[in-house]
Image (cartoon, rainbow, N blue to C red; front, side, top):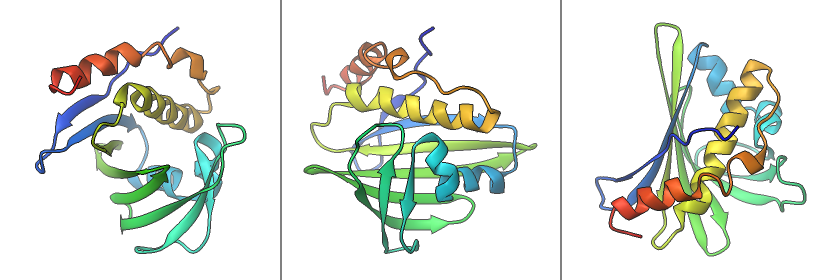
Length: 170
């Protein structure tokens, strides 16, 4: 079964394009925060990191869901536990600015994922990838088996091509 894509592509206040994805969890915000910041827990769904974490510091991040992926440096731009984390991944010539914003209401925590899309970036390749990783986070938290990559890509590529086309970029 192919999961339905849930992401949106919007123009932010700076005139740039952002990829937005939301996931909700029946859990306290502190527990969800730990799932996205503690290396032992992030390793279960996306990858682990090492180094001394802190605003302005760089940690070494190693993907665990992609066999043979090289380690990469991740700069921590903002960290306001347990509500906001902003990091920058270096992806070849691109810098991927990722924001995670968490809110809690009525024992439900919502995670809002935002990726600033670099100029000319093909969101039809990365949109399905972030859907996949965030669904892996959901599966990990629920104790379910991990989703398969082939259910996301290329199945969701057309959805994201249409989303970027609607923004006048396709």
